[in-house]
Image (spheres, rainbow over the protein chains, first blue to last red):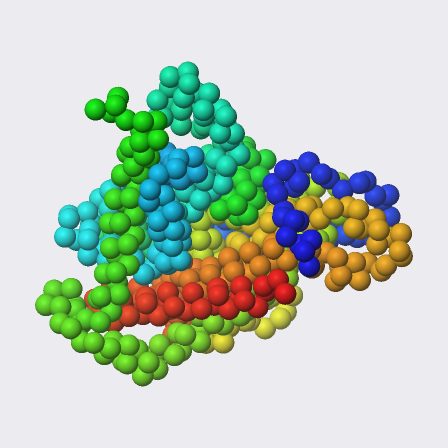
Amino acid sequence: MAVTEEIRPNADALLHAAPPRRPANLGQILRWTLLFLGGIAMVMPIAYMISTSLKWPHEVYNLQLIPDEPHLENYTYVLEDGRFYGWFINSIVIAVVTTVSNVLFDSLVGYTLCKFRFPGRYIVFIAILSTLMIPTEMLVIPWYLMSQQLGWLDTYWGIMFPGLMTAFGTFLMKQFFETVPDDFIEAARIDGLNELQIWWTVAMPLVKPALAALAIFVFLGNWTAFIWPLIVTNSVEMYTLPVGLSSFGDEADVAWELIMTGAAISTIPTLVVFLIFQRYIIQGVVMAGLKG
Amino acid sequence: MYRNLTIKQKQIVWAWAFLALPVLFYSVIRFYPTGNAMLISFQDWNLLGTRTWTGLDNYTTLLSDPVFWQVFRNTFIYLLLGTPVSLVVAFGIAYHLDKVRFMHGFLRMLYFLPFMTSAVAMAWVWRWFYQPVPVGLFNNALASIGIPQINFLNSTTNALPAILAPAVWAGLGFQVIIFMAGLRAIPRSYYEAARIDGVSTWTVLWEITLPLLRPTIVFLVVFSSIGFLRIFDHVFNMTTNNPGGPLNSTKPLVLMIYQTAFSSFDMGYAAAQTVVLFIVLLLVSLFQLWIMRDR
Protein backbone atom coordinates (compact mmCIF):
# COMPACT_ATOMS: atom_id res chain seq x y z
CA MET A 1 0.00 0.00 0.00
CA ALA A 2 1.65 3.17 -1.16
CA VAL A 3 -0.34 5.38 1.13
CA THR A 4 1.19 3.99 4.35
CA GLU A 5 4.46 5.65 3.42
CA GLU A 6 3.01 9.11 3.79
CA ILE A 7 1.13 8.67 7.03
CA ARG A 8 3.75 9.08 9.69
CA PRO A 9 2.69 10.05 13.17
CA ASN A 10 4.02 13.36 14.37
CA ALA A 11 4.17 15.25 17.60
CA ASP A 12 2.20 18.27 16.46
CA ALA A 13 -0.75 16.12 15.45
CA LEU A 14 -0.88 14.71 18.96
CA LEU A 15 -1.17 18.10 20.56
CA HIS A 16 -3.31 20.06 18.16
CA ALA A 17 -5.76 17.94 16.19
CA ALA A 18 -8.16 16.84 18.90
CA PRO A 19 -11.03 14.68 17.67
CA PRO A 20 -14.38 16.38 17.18
CA ARG A 21 -16.59 16.49 20.25
CA ARG A 22 -18.99 13.60 20.52
CA PRO A 23 -22.33 13.73 22.27
CA ALA A 24 -22.11 12.19 25.74
CA ASN A 25 -23.87 8.85 25.52
CA LEU A 26 -23.79 5.75 27.65
CA GLY A 27 -20.93 4.16 25.69
CA GLN A 28 -18.85 7.27 26.00
CA ILE A 29 -19.43 7.49 29.76
CA LEU A 30 -18.50 3.82 30.17
CA ARG A 31 -15.36 4.36 28.09
CA TRP A 32 -14.33 7.31 30.24
CA THR A 33 -15.00 5.47 33.50
CA LEU A 34 -12.93 2.45 32.47
CA LEU A 35 -10.05 4.64 31.30
CA PHE A 36 -10.21 6.57 34.56
CA LEU A 37 -10.13 3.40 36.68
CA GLY A 38 -7.26 2.03 34.57
CA GLY A 39 -5.36 5.28 35.02
CA ILE A 40 -5.86 5.19 38.78
CA ALA A 41 -4.57 1.60 38.82
CA MET A 42 -1.51 2.74 36.84
CA VAL A 43 -0.46 5.30 39.46
CA MET A 44 -1.26 3.06 42.45
CA PRO A 45 2.32 1.80 42.90
CA ILE A 46 3.55 5.41 42.95
CA ALA A 47 0.77 6.45 45.30
CA TYR A 48 1.51 3.59 47.72
CA MET A 49 5.21 4.38 47.62
CA ILE A 50 4.59 7.99 48.64
CA SER A 51 1.90 7.09 51.15
CA THR A 52 4.13 4.51 52.89
CA SER A 53 7.01 6.99 53.04
CA LEU A 54 4.71 9.18 55.18
CA LYS A 55 3.63 6.39 57.55
CA TRP A 56 4.84 5.21 60.96
CA PRO A 57 6.22 1.65 61.04
CA HIS A 58 3.09 0.19 62.66
CA GLU A 59 0.86 1.46 59.83
CA VAL A 60 2.99 0.12 56.98
CA TYR A 61 1.18 -3.20 56.64
CA ASN A 62 -2.36 -1.89 56.39
CA LEU A 63 -3.91 -1.20 53.02
CA GLN A 64 -4.96 2.35 53.81
CA LEU A 65 -3.73 4.79 51.19
CA ILE A 66 -4.04 7.92 53.35
CA PRO A 67 -1.86 7.60 56.47
CA ASP A 68 -3.64 8.27 59.78
CA GLU A 69 -0.96 10.70 60.91
CA PRO A 70 1.24 11.63 57.94
CA HIS A 71 4.71 12.86 58.90
CA LEU A 72 8.12 13.54 57.34
CA GLU A 73 10.23 11.75 59.97
CA ASN A 74 11.28 9.08 57.46
CA TYR A 75 12.65 11.73 55.12
CA THR A 76 14.68 13.48 57.81
CA TYR A 77 15.95 10.11 59.03
CA VAL A 78 17.01 8.96 55.55
CA LEU A 79 18.61 12.26 54.58
CA GLU A 80 20.40 12.74 57.91
CA ASP A 81 22.00 9.34 57.42
CA GLY A 82 24.29 11.12 54.95
CA ARG A 83 24.67 8.24 52.51
CA PHE A 84 21.44 9.00 50.73
CA TYR A 85 22.21 12.67 50.52
CA GLY A 86 25.59 11.84 48.95
CA TRP A 87 24.00 9.49 46.40
CA PHE A 88 21.48 12.16 45.51
CA ILE A 89 24.28 14.66 44.82
CA ASN A 90 26.21 12.06 42.80
CA SER A 91 23.16 11.34 40.66
CA ILE A 92 22.49 15.03 40.07
CA VAL A 93 26.10 15.79 39.08
CA ILE A 94 26.32 12.82 36.72
CA ALA A 95 22.94 13.40 35.08
CA VAL A 96 23.56 17.15 34.61
CA VAL A 97 27.08 16.82 33.19
CA THR A 98 26.04 14.02 30.83
CA THR A 99 23.03 16.00 29.66
CA VAL A 100 25.08 19.13 28.92
CA SER A 101 27.67 17.06 27.08
CA ASN A 102 25.05 15.33 24.94
CA VAL A 103 23.22 18.55 24.11
CA LEU A 104 26.48 20.16 22.95
CA PHE A 105 28.22 17.31 21.17
CA ASP A 106 25.24 15.46 19.69
CA SER A 107 23.95 18.68 18.19
CA LEU A 108 27.40 19.72 16.94
CA VAL A 109 27.90 16.37 15.22
CA GLY A 110 24.33 16.28 13.93
CA TYR A 111 24.74 19.80 12.57
CA THR A 112 28.06 19.02 10.90
CA LEU A 113 26.74 15.87 9.25
CA CYS A 114 23.64 17.72 8.10
CA LYS A 115 25.00 21.05 6.86
CA PHE A 116 28.60 20.47 5.74
CA ARG A 117 29.83 18.76 2.57
CA PHE A 118 33.27 17.25 3.12
CA PRO A 119 35.19 14.09 2.27
CA GLY A 120 34.51 11.36 4.82
CA ARG A 121 31.04 12.64 5.71
CA TYR A 122 29.26 9.51 4.62
CA ILE A 123 31.72 7.21 6.42
CA VAL A 124 31.39 9.12 9.71
CA PHE A 125 27.61 9.04 9.33
CA ILE A 126 27.49 5.27 8.76
CA ALA A 127 30.05 4.62 11.50
CA ILE A 128 28.04 6.50 14.12
CA LEU A 129 24.80 4.94 12.90
CA SER A 130 26.26 1.46 13.22
CA THR A 131 26.99 1.96 16.93
CA LEU A 132 23.22 1.99 17.53
CA MET A 133 23.20 -1.76 16.90
CA ILE A 134 25.77 -2.56 19.58
CA PRO A 135 24.14 -3.26 22.95
CA THR A 136 25.69 -1.51 25.97
CA GLU A 137 26.02 -4.88 27.69
CA MET A 138 28.59 -5.92 25.11
CA LEU A 139 30.74 -2.92 25.95
CA VAL A 140 30.67 -3.06 29.76
CA ILE A 141 33.48 -5.63 30.03
CA PRO A 142 35.95 -3.65 27.84
CA TRP A 143 34.88 -0.41 29.56
CA TYR A 144 35.58 -2.00 32.93
CA LEU A 145 39.04 -3.15 31.81
CA MET A 146 39.75 0.28 30.38
CA SER A 147 38.64 1.99 33.62
CA GLN A 148 40.77 -0.39 35.64
CA GLN A 149 43.90 0.33 33.62
CA LEU A 150 43.37 4.10 33.55
CA GLY A 151 42.30 4.47 37.18
CA TRP A 152 38.73 5.48 36.34
CA LEU A 153 37.05 2.95 38.63
CA ASP A 154 34.99 4.51 41.39
CA THR A 155 35.15 8.07 39.99
CA TYR A 156 32.56 10.44 38.50
CA TRP A 157 34.40 10.34 35.20
CA GLY A 158 34.28 6.53 35.24
CA ILE A 159 30.50 6.57 35.70
CA MET A 160 29.92 9.23 33.03
CA PHE A 161 32.35 8.60 30.21
CA PRO A 162 30.37 5.97 28.26
CA GLY A 163 27.36 8.27 27.95
CA LEU A 164 28.95 11.60 27.05
CA MET A 165 27.79 11.30 23.43
CA THR A 166 25.09 9.10 21.96
CA ALA A 167 24.35 8.03 18.41
CA PHE A 168 20.64 8.32 19.19
CA GLY A 169 21.01 12.00 20.14
CA THR A 170 23.18 12.69 17.11
CA PHE A 171 20.56 11.36 14.71
CA LEU A 172 17.73 13.09 16.49
CA MET A 173 19.58 16.40 16.09
CA LYS A 174 20.59 15.68 12.49
CA GLN A 175 16.92 15.13 11.63
CA PHE A 176 15.98 18.45 13.17
CA PHE A 177 18.77 20.46 11.55
CA GLU A 178 17.29 19.35 8.21
CA THR A 179 14.44 21.76 8.99
CA VAL A 180 16.85 24.73 9.31
CA PRO A 181 16.97 26.43 5.86
CA ASP A 182 20.42 26.58 4.26
CA ASP A 183 19.70 30.20 3.32
CA PHE A 184 19.87 31.24 6.98
CA ILE A 185 23.32 29.73 7.32
CA GLU A 186 24.47 31.23 4.02
CA ALA A 187 23.23 34.66 5.10
CA ALA A 188 25.11 34.41 8.41
CA ARG A 189 28.26 33.45 6.51
CA ILE A 190 27.95 36.55 4.33
CA ASP A 191 27.52 38.61 7.50
CA GLY A 192 30.97 37.40 8.51
CA LEU A 193 30.10 34.98 11.31
CA ASN A 194 32.45 32.03 11.65
CA GLU A 195 31.08 28.48 11.56
CA LEU A 196 31.10 28.05 15.33
CA GLN A 197 29.07 31.25 15.76
CA ILE A 198 26.65 30.20 13.03
CA TRP A 199 26.01 26.86 14.75
CA TRP A 200 25.57 28.42 18.18
CA THR A 201 23.70 31.65 17.42
CA VAL A 202 21.78 30.81 14.23
CA ALA A 203 21.12 27.08 14.06
CA MET A 204 20.83 26.08 17.74
CA PRO A 205 18.02 28.52 18.65
CA LEU A 206 15.96 27.13 15.76
CA VAL A 207 15.97 23.57 17.14
CA LYS A 208 15.22 24.37 20.78
CA PRO A 209 12.28 21.92 21.05
CA ALA A 210 14.52 19.09 19.87
CA LEU A 211 17.25 20.14 22.31
CA ALA A 212 14.70 20.06 25.12
CA ALA A 213 13.54 16.60 24.09
CA LEU A 214 17.11 15.35 23.93
CA ALA A 215 17.96 16.89 27.31
CA ILE A 216 14.95 15.26 28.98
CA PHE A 217 15.76 11.84 27.53
CA VAL A 218 19.43 11.96 28.44
CA PHE A 219 18.73 13.25 31.94
CA LEU A 220 16.08 10.61 32.65
CA GLY A 221 18.28 7.88 31.18
CA ASN A 222 21.24 8.81 33.37
CA TRP A 223 19.17 9.46 36.48
CA THR A 224 17.79 5.92 36.32
CA ALA A 225 20.91 4.22 34.85
CA PHE A 226 21.79 1.12 36.81
CA ILE A 227 24.03 -1.57 35.32
CA TRP A 228 27.12 0.51 34.49
CA PRO A 229 27.18 2.57 37.73
CA LEU A 230 26.73 -0.74 39.59
CA ILE A 231 29.79 -2.18 37.86
CA VAL A 232 32.09 0.84 37.99
CA THR A 233 31.53 1.95 41.60
CA ASN A 234 33.01 0.14 44.61
CA SER A 235 32.76 2.52 47.53
CA VAL A 236 29.43 3.41 49.11
CA GLU A 237 30.22 7.15 48.76
CA MET A 238 30.43 6.91 44.96
CA TYR A 239 27.11 5.11 44.46
CA THR A 240 24.39 6.78 42.44
CA LEU A 241 20.82 6.74 43.80
CA PRO A 242 19.72 3.56 41.96
CA VAL A 243 22.87 1.66 42.99
CA GLY A 244 22.54 2.86 46.57
CA LEU A 245 18.88 1.95 46.71
CA SER A 246 19.64 -1.47 45.29
CA SER A 247 22.27 -2.09 47.98
CA PHE A 248 19.66 -2.25 50.75
CA GLY A 249 19.51 -5.98 50.24
CA ASP A 250 17.80 -8.47 52.42
CA GLU A 251 14.03 -8.51 52.74
CA ALA A 252 14.12 -10.10 56.18
CA ASP A 253 15.35 -7.01 57.98
CA VAL A 254 13.96 -4.38 55.67
CA ALA A 255 12.23 -1.35 57.15
CA TRP A 256 9.75 -0.92 54.32
CA GLU A 257 8.78 2.64 55.22
CA LEU A 258 12.45 3.70 54.92
CA ILE A 259 12.94 1.83 51.65
CA MET A 260 9.81 3.52 50.26
CA THR A 261 11.19 6.86 51.40
CA GLY A 262 14.41 6.17 49.50
CA ALA A 263 12.45 5.09 46.44
CA ALA A 264 10.32 8.23 46.70
CA ILE A 265 13.39 10.46 46.96
CA SER A 266 14.75 9.01 43.73
CA THR A 267 11.39 9.20 41.94
CA ILE A 268 9.86 12.50 43.06
CA PRO A 269 12.36 14.78 41.21
CA THR A 270 11.52 13.25 37.83
CA LEU A 271 7.80 13.28 38.61
CA VAL A 272 7.95 16.97 39.53
CA VAL A 273 9.89 17.79 36.36
CA PHE A 274 7.26 15.86 34.41
CA LEU A 275 4.32 17.65 36.01
CA ILE A 276 5.88 21.05 35.25
CA PHE A 277 7.00 20.35 31.68
CA GLN A 278 4.34 17.77 30.81
CA ARG A 279 3.49 19.24 27.45
CA TYR A 280 7.10 19.47 26.28
CA ILE A 281 7.98 16.05 27.59
CA ILE A 282 5.11 14.30 25.82
CA GLN A 283 5.91 16.18 22.63
CA GLY A 284 9.58 15.30 23.13
CA VAL A 285 8.83 11.60 23.64
CA VAL A 286 6.97 11.48 20.34
CA MET A 287 9.66 13.44 18.49
CA ALA A 288 12.48 11.37 19.93
CA GLY A 289 10.63 8.11 19.52
CA LEU A 290 9.72 8.69 15.90
CA LYS A 291 12.62 10.67 14.51
CA GLY A 292 15.50 9.24 16.51
CA MET B 1 47.45 29.99 5.70
CA TYR B 2 43.77 29.54 6.55
CA ARG B 3 43.06 32.82 4.72
CA ASN B 4 44.33 31.44 1.45
CA LEU B 5 41.87 28.54 1.40
CA THR B 6 38.78 28.55 -0.80
CA ILE B 7 35.36 28.63 0.88
CA LYS B 8 34.97 24.94 0.16
CA GLN B 9 38.31 24.08 1.75
CA LYS B 10 37.50 26.19 4.81
CA GLN B 11 34.29 24.18 5.20
CA ILE B 12 36.28 20.97 5.22
CA VAL B 13 38.61 22.32 7.89
CA TRP B 14 35.67 23.41 10.07
CA ALA B 15 33.82 20.14 9.63
CA TRP B 16 36.77 18.07 10.78
CA ALA B 17 37.52 20.48 13.61
CA PHE B 18 33.94 19.95 14.84
CA LEU B 19 34.19 16.19 14.41
CA ALA B 20 37.68 15.63 15.84
CA LEU B 21 36.66 15.04 19.45
CA PRO B 22 33.50 13.04 18.63
CA VAL B 23 35.36 10.81 16.16
CA LEU B 24 37.97 10.14 18.84
CA PHE B 25 35.17 9.39 21.35
CA TYR B 26 33.35 6.96 19.07
CA SER B 27 36.60 5.21 18.15
CA VAL B 28 37.85 4.77 21.71
CA ILE B 29 34.56 4.33 23.62
CA ARG B 30 32.48 2.46 21.04
CA PHE B 31 34.51 0.80 18.28
CA TYR B 32 37.60 -0.28 20.17
CA PRO B 33 35.53 -1.90 22.99
CA THR B 34 33.34 -3.69 20.43
CA GLY B 35 36.41 -5.27 18.83
CA ASN B 36 37.89 -5.92 22.25
CA ALA B 37 34.76 -7.74 23.46
CA MET B 38 34.89 -10.01 20.41
CA LEU B 39 38.60 -10.64 20.97
CA ILE B 40 38.17 -11.47 24.67
CA SER B 41 35.39 -13.91 23.77
CA PHE B 42 38.08 -16.16 22.22
CA GLN B 43 40.30 -16.00 25.29
CA ASP B 44 40.45 -17.46 28.76
CA TRP B 45 41.00 -14.75 31.32
CA ASN B 46 40.08 -14.36 34.99
CA LEU B 47 41.17 -10.70 35.21
CA LEU B 48 44.29 -11.45 37.29
CA GLY B 49 46.14 -14.17 35.36
CA THR B 50 47.37 -14.08 31.79
CA ARG B 51 45.11 -14.00 28.79
CA THR B 52 45.38 -17.24 26.87
CA TRP B 53 43.97 -17.90 23.42
CA THR B 54 41.38 -20.67 23.53
CA GLY B 55 39.68 -20.37 20.16
CA LEU B 56 36.03 -21.34 20.27
CA ASP B 57 36.17 -22.97 23.72
CA ASN B 58 34.01 -20.31 25.38
CA TYR B 59 31.32 -20.77 22.76
CA THR B 60 31.31 -24.58 22.94
CA THR B 61 31.17 -24.41 26.75
CA LEU B 62 28.25 -22.02 26.46
CA LEU B 63 26.31 -24.28 24.12
CA SER B 64 26.72 -27.25 26.46
CA ASP B 65 25.90 -25.24 29.60
CA PRO B 66 22.39 -26.17 30.83
CA VAL B 67 22.18 -22.84 32.72
CA PHE B 68 22.70 -20.99 29.44
CA TRP B 69 19.77 -22.78 27.82
CA GLN B 70 17.59 -22.07 30.83
CA VAL B 71 18.62 -18.41 30.63
CA PHE B 72 18.06 -18.34 26.88
CA ARG B 73 14.55 -19.71 27.41
CA ASN B 74 13.80 -17.16 30.16
CA THR B 75 14.99 -14.31 27.96
CA PHE B 76 12.63 -15.36 25.17
CA ILE B 77 9.74 -15.80 27.62
CA TYR B 78 10.27 -12.19 28.72
CA LEU B 79 10.18 -11.19 25.05
CA LEU B 80 7.27 -13.38 23.93
CA LEU B 81 5.08 -12.48 26.91
CA GLY B 82 6.15 -8.88 27.36
CA THR B 83 5.97 -7.52 23.82
CA PRO B 84 2.50 -8.77 22.76
CA VAL B 85 0.90 -8.07 26.14
CA SER B 86 2.25 -4.54 26.42
CA LEU B 87 1.47 -3.67 22.79
CA VAL B 88 -2.10 -4.97 22.88
CA VAL B 89 -2.84 -3.25 26.19
CA ALA B 90 -1.17 -0.01 25.06
CA PHE B 91 -3.11 -0.02 21.81
CA GLY B 92 -6.39 -0.63 23.64
CA ILE B 93 -5.74 2.30 25.96
CA ALA B 94 -4.57 4.59 23.15
CA TYR B 95 -7.51 3.67 20.89
CA HIS B 96 -10.07 4.58 23.54
CA LEU B 97 -8.16 7.50 25.05
CA ASP B 98 -8.06 9.03 21.57
CA LYS B 99 -11.86 9.12 21.54
CA VAL B 100 -12.19 10.82 24.93
CA ARG B 101 -12.06 14.58 25.41
CA PHE B 102 -13.23 15.10 28.96
CA MET B 103 -10.10 15.43 31.15
CA HIS B 104 -8.09 13.97 28.28
CA GLY B 105 -4.80 15.51 29.45
CA PHE B 106 -5.30 14.26 33.00
CA LEU B 107 -5.99 10.68 31.91
CA ARG B 108 -2.98 10.74 29.60
CA MET B 109 -0.84 11.94 32.50
CA LEU B 110 -1.99 9.04 34.72
CA TYR B 111 -0.93 6.50 32.09
CA PHE B 112 2.37 8.23 31.37
CA LEU B 113 3.61 8.83 34.94
CA PRO B 114 5.12 5.33 35.47
CA PHE B 115 7.44 5.94 32.49
CA MET B 116 9.15 8.69 34.51
CA THR B 117 10.07 6.39 37.41
CA SER B 118 13.33 4.59 38.05
CA ALA B 119 13.30 0.80 37.63
CA VAL B 120 15.24 0.24 40.85
CA ALA B 121 12.86 2.33 42.97
CA MET B 122 9.81 0.67 41.48
CA ALA B 123 11.32 -2.80 41.80
CA TRP B 124 11.35 -2.20 45.56
CA VAL B 125 7.71 -1.07 45.53
CA TRP B 126 6.56 -4.12 43.57
CA ARG B 127 8.71 -6.37 45.69
CA TRP B 128 6.91 -5.06 48.73
CA PHE B 129 3.53 -5.65 47.02
CA TYR B 130 4.50 -9.28 46.37
CA GLN B 131 5.61 -10.18 49.94
CA PRO B 132 3.67 -12.81 51.89
CA VAL B 133 1.28 -11.80 54.68
CA PRO B 134 1.58 -9.67 56.80
CA VAL B 135 3.92 -7.51 54.69
CA GLY B 136 2.79 -7.61 51.07
CA LEU B 137 -0.05 -5.51 49.76
CA PHE B 138 -1.39 -8.06 47.27
CA ASN B 139 -1.47 -10.94 49.71
CA ASN B 140 -2.96 -8.74 52.41
CA ALA B 141 -5.69 -7.74 49.98
CA LEU B 142 -6.29 -11.39 49.08
CA ALA B 143 -6.38 -12.37 52.74
CA SER B 144 -8.92 -9.69 53.55
CA ILE B 145 -11.38 -11.13 51.03
CA GLY B 146 -10.56 -14.71 52.02
CA ILE B 147 -8.64 -15.88 48.95
CA PRO B 148 -5.63 -18.18 49.56
CA GLN B 149 -2.16 -16.66 49.44
CA ILE B 150 -0.19 -16.51 46.22
CA ASN B 151 3.52 -17.14 46.34
CA PHE B 152 4.93 -14.60 43.89
CA LEU B 153 8.69 -14.19 44.00
CA ASN B 154 9.64 -17.50 45.63
CA SER B 155 7.88 -19.68 43.11
CA THR B 156 9.66 -20.98 40.02
CA THR B 157 6.49 -20.56 37.94
CA ASN B 158 5.13 -17.25 39.26
CA ALA B 159 8.35 -15.29 39.71
CA LEU B 160 9.02 -14.55 36.05
CA PRO B 161 5.58 -13.06 35.27
CA ALA B 162 5.71 -11.22 38.63
CA ILE B 163 8.97 -9.55 37.57
CA LEU B 164 7.73 -8.90 34.05
CA ALA B 165 4.64 -7.04 35.33
CA PRO B 166 6.47 -3.91 36.58
CA ALA B 167 8.59 -3.87 33.40
CA VAL B 168 5.43 -3.84 31.25
CA TRP B 169 3.80 -1.33 33.59
CA ALA B 170 6.71 1.11 33.34
CA GLY B 171 6.87 1.02 29.54
CA LEU B 172 3.14 1.24 28.86
CA GLY B 173 2.89 5.03 28.99
CA PHE B 174 5.51 5.48 26.28
CA GLN B 175 3.73 3.05 23.97
CA VAL B 176 0.35 4.69 24.59
CA ILE B 177 1.76 8.10 23.64
CA ILE B 178 3.39 6.77 20.47
CA PHE B 179 0.21 4.92 19.47
CA MET B 180 -1.87 8.06 20.01
CA ALA B 181 0.47 10.10 17.86
CA GLY B 182 0.10 7.43 15.19
CA LEU B 183 -3.70 7.41 15.46
CA ARG B 184 -3.90 11.20 15.23
CA ALA B 185 -1.84 11.18 12.05
CA ILE B 186 -4.46 9.14 10.16
CA PRO B 187 -6.48 11.62 8.07
CA ARG B 188 -10.06 11.99 9.28
CA SER B 189 -11.31 11.80 5.70
CA TYR B 190 -10.70 8.02 5.71
CA TYR B 191 -13.02 7.61 8.67
CA GLU B 192 -15.63 9.92 7.20
CA ALA B 193 -15.60 8.00 3.94
CA ALA B 194 -16.04 4.76 5.89
CA ARG B 195 -18.92 6.23 7.90
CA ILE B 196 -20.73 7.36 4.76
CA ASP B 197 -20.33 3.85 3.38
CA GLY B 198 -21.82 2.51 6.62
CA VAL B 199 -18.83 0.33 7.53
CA SER B 200 -18.87 -1.18 11.04
CA THR B 201 -16.48 0.06 13.75
CA TRP B 202 -14.78 -3.33 13.82
CA THR B 203 -14.12 -3.28 10.07
CA VAL B 204 -12.82 0.28 10.28
CA LEU B 205 -10.36 -0.86 12.95
CA TRP B 206 -9.09 -3.83 10.92
CA GLU B 207 -9.24 -2.33 7.44
CA ILE B 208 -8.25 1.29 8.04
CA THR B 209 -6.75 1.97 11.45
CA LEU B 210 -4.39 -0.97 11.89
CA PRO B 211 -3.01 -1.05 8.31
CA LEU B 212 -2.34 2.70 8.40
CA LEU B 213 -0.69 2.33 11.80
CA ARG B 214 1.92 -0.06 10.41
CA PRO B 215 4.98 2.25 10.76
CA THR B 216 4.05 2.90 14.41
CA ILE B 217 3.51 -0.79 15.13
CA VAL B 218 6.80 -1.82 13.50
CA PHE B 219 8.68 0.79 15.53
CA LEU B 220 7.08 -0.24 18.83
CA VAL B 221 7.50 -3.98 18.25
CA VAL B 222 11.21 -3.65 17.50
CA PHE B 223 11.80 -1.08 20.26
CA SER B 224 10.01 -3.00 22.99
CA SER B 225 11.48 -6.37 21.91
CA ILE B 226 14.98 -5.00 22.30
CA GLY B 227 13.99 -3.72 25.74
CA PHE B 228 12.65 -7.08 26.92
CA LEU B 229 15.63 -9.02 25.53
CA ARG B 230 17.90 -6.75 27.59
CA ILE B 231 15.86 -6.88 30.81
CA PHE B 232 18.12 -6.62 33.87
CA ASP B 233 17.27 -3.87 36.38
CA HIS B 234 13.90 -5.34 37.42
CA VAL B 235 15.19 -8.90 37.74
CA PHE B 236 18.33 -7.95 39.66
CA ASN B 237 16.43 -5.75 42.10
CA MET B 238 13.47 -8.03 42.76
CA THR B 239 15.59 -11.11 43.42
CA THR B 240 18.50 -9.47 45.30
CA ASN B 241 18.96 -12.31 47.79
CA ASN B 242 19.54 -14.76 44.97
CA PRO B 243 19.74 -12.86 41.67
CA GLY B 244 17.89 -14.64 38.89
CA GLY B 245 16.32 -17.10 41.31
CA PRO B 246 14.59 -19.13 42.49
CA LEU B 247 16.67 -21.83 40.73
CA ASN B 248 17.56 -19.54 37.80
CA SER B 249 13.89 -19.44 36.82
CA THR B 250 13.94 -15.66 36.26
CA LYS B 251 17.51 -15.17 35.09
CA PRO B 252 17.82 -13.34 31.75
CA LEU B 253 20.92 -13.27 29.56
CA VAL B 254 22.16 -9.87 30.77
CA LEU B 255 22.09 -11.03 34.40
CA MET B 256 24.07 -14.15 33.46
CA ILE B 257 26.63 -11.91 31.73
CA TYR B 258 26.86 -9.68 34.80
CA GLN B 259 27.41 -12.62 37.15
CA THR B 260 29.92 -14.37 34.92
CA ALA B 261 31.95 -11.19 34.51
CA PHE B 262 31.67 -9.51 37.90
CA SER B 263 30.99 -12.34 40.37
CA SER B 264 33.02 -15.18 38.81
CA PHE B 265 35.43 -12.85 36.94
CA ASP B 266 35.42 -15.22 33.97
CA MET B 267 35.86 -12.43 31.43
CA GLY B 268 36.33 -14.59 28.34
CA TYR B 269 33.19 -16.60 29.00
CA ALA B 270 31.18 -13.44 29.77
CA ALA B 271 32.42 -11.77 26.59
CA ALA B 272 31.25 -14.79 24.57
CA GLN B 273 27.81 -14.37 26.17
CA THR B 274 27.72 -10.70 25.17
CA VAL B 275 28.51 -11.65 21.58
CA VAL B 276 25.58 -14.09 21.68
CA LEU B 277 23.34 -11.32 23.05
CA PHE B 278 24.44 -9.06 20.21
CA ILE B 279 23.65 -11.73 17.60
CA VAL B 280 20.25 -12.47 19.18
CA LEU B 281 19.30 -8.77 19.20
CA LEU B 282 20.38 -8.38 15.59
CA LEU B 283 18.54 -11.48 14.37
CA VAL B 284 15.33 -10.68 16.26
CA SER B 285 15.27 -7.09 14.93
CA LEU B 286 15.98 -8.18 11.35
CA PHE B 287 13.39 -10.96 11.58
CA GLN B 288 10.72 -8.53 12.80
CA LEU B 289 11.53 -5.95 10.15
CA TRP B 290 11.32 -8.71 7.54
CA ILE B 291 7.98 -10.02 8.85
CA MET B 292 6.46 -6.55 9.02
CA ARG B 293 7.90 -5.18 5.79
CA ASP B 294 5.63 -3.52 3.25
CA ARG B 295 4.50 -6.12 0.80
